[in-house]
Amino acid sequence: MKKIKFILILITGLIIMAPQNALAQKNEKVKKEMKTAKEKTSKDVKQEAKEFKQEAKAIGKNEKAKEKEQVKELKDQEKEEARELGKNTRAQAKEEKELAKSQKGKEKKIKEDADRDDGDAEAEGNAYGKNKGELQGREFGQSRAAEARAKLQSHENSIQNAQEESTRAKSRIQAAREKLEVAKAEGKLTEEEIAAKEEKIARAEQRLKNLETNVAKNKTDLKSQKEKLKKVDKKDQ
Amino acid sequence: MNYKRILFLGIALALIWSCRDKKKEKAEDEAVVKEVEALEAEIEENAKSLESDTKDLKEALEELDSI
Image 1: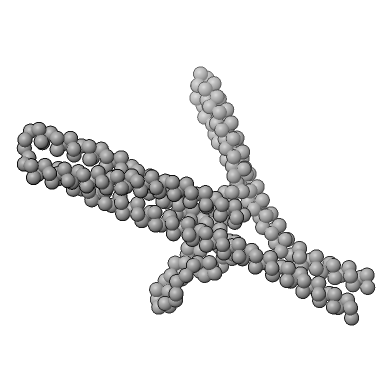
Image 2 (image 1 turned 90 degrees about the vertical axis):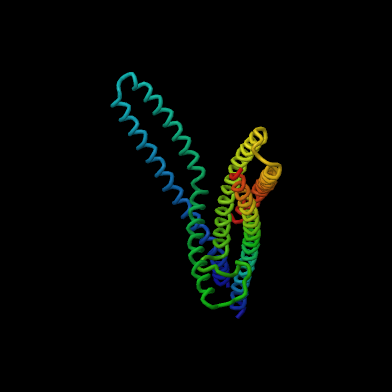
């Protein structure tokens, strides 16, 4: 009876431990990637330092001291970078994984979209539970988060572009106004022409104002969206 | 006879436990995906409005060139 109890406990223990072992294996993989990334960075740093040393030798004596200082600074910088990289390797490895997964997911999506276009008129719905392809649960969530991050990045760029556009527009509107003032002073234009041009300027100013308010709104939204994405990332981990 | 029952019970319990964990995990993952989708929709909407405003401004600026 004792033996049976022992076997029973052993079997239940094994069943419970099985998924945990899988998780541990995943963690080991991530650690291995981290190690390889660290080794790579340290090798790169050493190589660059060597190259700098050789260059420093080739240059004259007076310049040698300067070069040495530069090499030292570079070394320090690279060491710091290596440290930071060491800290961030895990995150980078994760991001790379997510990107790879998202690419896979995208390819799958495109294929599925093409299939849908061919004739399958299925009702559209949320992506969860659909179009997962090879990705499973958490991996799928991570790939979606990576996609959202990419979208957010491109949106940030477009906000910046819009801001640049608005500053350009400001100067152009100012130039147009000055031109109109000059034309008015010279008395070249009729009142109707002046009114039409002022209307154009006013319209441009109104649209500039709209864009500026939209940019400001988008900026505040962007902050909250980033925070939300961070929270999602934390949940995903 | 008893040990067989106990063994069966133990295995069943372990299976139920693991299934429950999986369900919980699945629900959490789905919630995350939902959140991300809502976020993406928001981003897309904002991007669209920004794009249309920029387009409007560009049109108005083109009109200004004739001044």
